[in-house]
Image 1: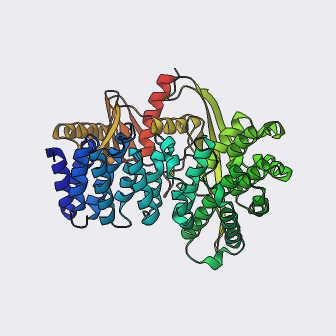
Image 2: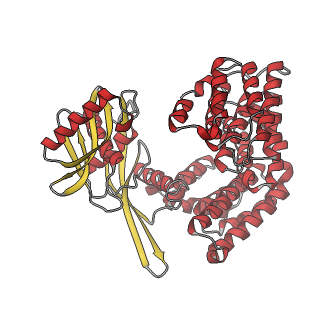
Length: 522
C-alpha cells in the first residue's frame, strides 16, 4: 500500500482521537483515494475491513473518501470482465460493507462506488448488498443510486429484475421504482422493468391511498410530532407518486380504479401524477383534472410538462403559462420541498420583476421577487402567520432572515451575493486566519471604531476580487447589527427582528451583491 493510503488508514485507526484539525486535514485528502488504481484500492478496502468498528468521525471521513473515489470511477470505462484487481476490489468492498454499522454513512458511499464501477461483478455486488442489507438513512440510499441516474444509466438496466425485490422494503421501494421509471422514460429498457409486477403495484397504490386518506382525515390518531407526521406523509406521497408514474408507463388499464382514488386525495403533487397517469391511459377526466391543476403554483411546472407531453398545452389557461406564472411556480415548488418549508405557501404576490445581468449567466436574465406568506393555526393560540420575500428566475431561493422591509435593489443584491461562485470570492472565520491576516482584521476593526461603531466583534474576513472586507457584529447609535467594512466604506445592517434579523451571511451577501450587480448592470 502506498504512503498516502497508509496515512488514510492511520486516520481511521485513530477514530475517537481525531481532533477537528485532523478531520479538516482528512477531508482535504479525498483525492488520495480517488487517484488510487484498482489494485491499491483493493488493498485499502481490505485493510479497512480488518479494522475494529469505526468511530463516528472516522466513519464520516471514510464516506467522504469513498464518494470522491466514486466520482472519479464513474468517469472511467467499466473494468474488463474478470479483471483480477477489479474482482479483488469488489470482494474487499463487500467485506468492508459487512463490517459497517447499518447507519454508517460509509455504506451509501461504498454502494455508490460499486455502482460507479459499472461492470457486471460490481453491479451484482451492489444489488446483493442493497437488497439484503440496505443503508438505513435516506440520504445514503440516494447517494448509492446516483451513479445509475448519471454516467452508468446504460449499465443500470442490468440490475433489473433483481432490484425489484426492494419493492417490499418501504425505504427502498420509491428510489428503486423511480430508477425503473427513469430507465423506461430514457428508452434504456425495451419495456418497464416492473411490467410483470403490475398487480403488486396496483395493490401497493391502494394501500398507500388508504393510509394517506386516514392521515388527511384524522392526523391526530397517528400520534407523534408535526415533524414526524410530515415525514410519514412525505414518504407515502413519494412512493405513491412513483407508483402512479410506473403504472402509467406500463400502460395497464386495470390500474384506472386505484388512480381515480389517488386523484381524490388533497395532496396536489400526487393528484398531478394521478391525473397525468389517467390521461395517458385515455381517461378524459384525468386530462380535465390535469388542466385544472395548472392553477396551483406548486403543481404548475409539472402540469405544464405533462400537458406538453400529452398534447394538452392549448387547453391550459394562458395566464398560467406566462413567465411570471412559471417563476411563481418555481419558487412555490422550492418552498414546498421537504428540505425547505415542506409545504407550499398560503399566498404569493409579485413584488418586482426586471431583466438584468446576473452572476454566472452570460446573457441577461428575467428576475422575479415574490412576497410569500404562510398562515397556520396553532392549537389554543389562534392563527399565526409569517411572510418573507423570495427570488425566482436565475435561482429559486429564500433566506430564513426576513428581507421584507428591504428595497428591491438590496433584496436582489442579497440573492446575487449568496448565489455568486468564483475562485476570487472567498471568506473565512477570523479564528482560521494567519497572524498577518489577523493584524489586517485589527486594522479594519479600528476603522469601524473610528467610524462610530461600538462593541465591534470581528467574525469573518472576506476576499472579493483582490479586495478585503471585515464582517463584524457591532453597535451603532445604540442599535445592534452587522457591519461590513472595506478600505473605502463601512456598511451597517441593523437588527430589525429579534428572531429573523439579517445575519452575517445575509449582510455580507448584500455587500457582495451590490458590487456585482453594479458591475454587471452599469
